[in-house]
Length: 132
Image 1: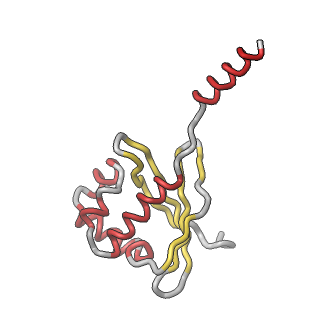
Image 2: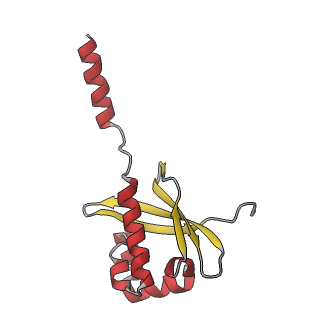
Image 3: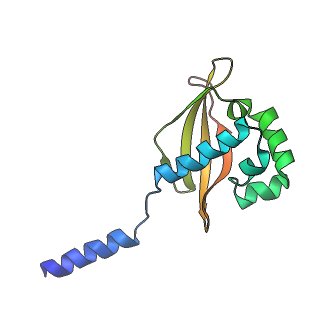
């Protein structure tokens, strides 16, 4: 009876959701930011999900969007990974970035796992603390 209980517990544990490897997720984000820092938009584009690649179509258009809309990601001074979050909608990796002017930003990276590993499926800037 005890052995059956252990087998059932193992089966439930193996069938349940698996937590993402934070190291693998963070490596994708870090590598994309390194590509942005060297203006290698072609390489940065490879870390984007198929959905994002479909929206922007080319690395050049993707790079233009990042330079104009996310300058803190294009040229961060520092970055720090906050605890990874798993939601019903998917995986979110919050990242705290200090920009060239010294301002802090927290960005939520939506991540999706595909056949070739983790990809970035969107980035949202969190509202500053206390903002309504």
